[in-house]
Image 1 (spheres, rainbow, N blue to C red):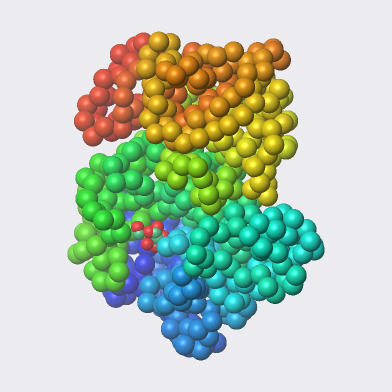
Image 2 (image 1 turned 90 degrees about the vertical axis):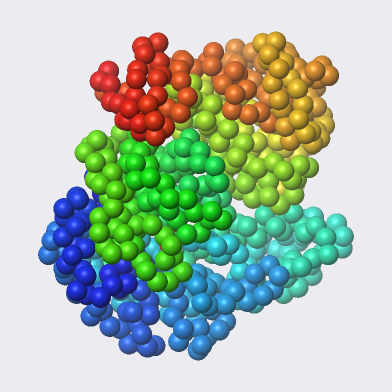
Length: 614
Ligand code: GLA
């Protein structure tokens, strides 16, 4: 990897501490820092008065010592004077309550006055640091803390303009939203309001457009900043995406930035290393290129119900895992450990007395083992679409079902067999892949329907796929445009809890949803105990087209996929990848582990990364 660094907050310390911090950075190989993303009030303490004195001093010291700098544009923390003068910049939540200042992200991108002030700030900031910057980060974690949504009058007006662009006429909108249902027909654009606090279920077609609009509003705000940055700087631009985060269309956002970066924090109460890996791979898949970990969890965080203190060795492993999944670098959040503020319990690479910790030692050691950027060979493509996440959220026949969780089950199965994955989107080519999986994809873009038909290798498609269209209507013949390809038609469906199916005479469990399918050429490979189809196979086109009528777990997917994918690795808590030169075996345990690679026994040390030349 090329980028080793940490997120640093000089403004949180007396200037006398900076030299000490920078000395430690040099000692432990910290070559990059990210600064400034929360410094609006420091840089513009009074409306229109810009003062870069303090940050300049820190920047000079860092650059004097050859430390590269990522500047974050500080629009995520509007200052008190701006809120006092223009309270309309504050967002409003779904219950119609204003989200007050006092933390961060208290703005709506659809407030014209906020945009005006934000763009002025970004203009001043970028011009001032254009020569000092090695990279730019726009704002910080768009959509975090549920801030994708805001329902102020400014948001409503912007939404109506967005709808006019999308539908042109009210007639088109009424048709697409099916407003004849429950007398929701609109005769005037200005009648359209956000469905806040409705007595019962909202209009699912309107809700999908609200998801789209809110995501687009954020992207538009990001692009307005990017436009300013590009005017004064040719350095790469990124935005820091989040773990397991599906509120915003990251695929669409990634189009406009040069490098995808993300913040790697443990996503679940019970740490699941392959789930973290699924996030790495999603980030790599957005632009099919190496990504940066902009914030790597150091050990303890402050924002979970229980914030355990992971031993320093974990940071070493997390850094190696990012490397094996194709990262170009890791920045740890945060270098310094702050003694005050909302995140005073958050761990850092230094302790509260600014002394190096075991975390810093382990990070520095991992640096030695992660030279270059791994370009892993990927055989399996998993189809993904952020809009499907929103469609799953809006309404469902089984509200316990979670799209990403169920996709991650498949991802983990493929990785445990020893193959690697790309998440693919509608506009991606599928040439390089051996196996294609299309899971729970309510809406499949027409372009991708054709790519499925043209795919030479086996395709596995699951229930819920091709059942809805881009208006969020249910289609007449599902899977839409693919009934002949898979030799089945979905004639009905319903929620299930825990239903047994037999696969190679071994019982497996199926959950959440079961399709009732009519066979039109396909044969049954596996059935439920009640005899209904669980897995069908159609080969009439000369290609293998599997249809899975329910939601299956990791182990069942391993059972289904292992005869199509070479079994490279036997063992648990291990991650395997290979590129053209090497194989990479990462022990995900903080204890010794024995695994078999191509039936050769390997004894691995705790969190060891073993590189085997091919
Ligand atoms: C996020 C933010 C950081 C900080 C960390 C805490 O990722 O970007 O500013 O709040 O979480 O873990």
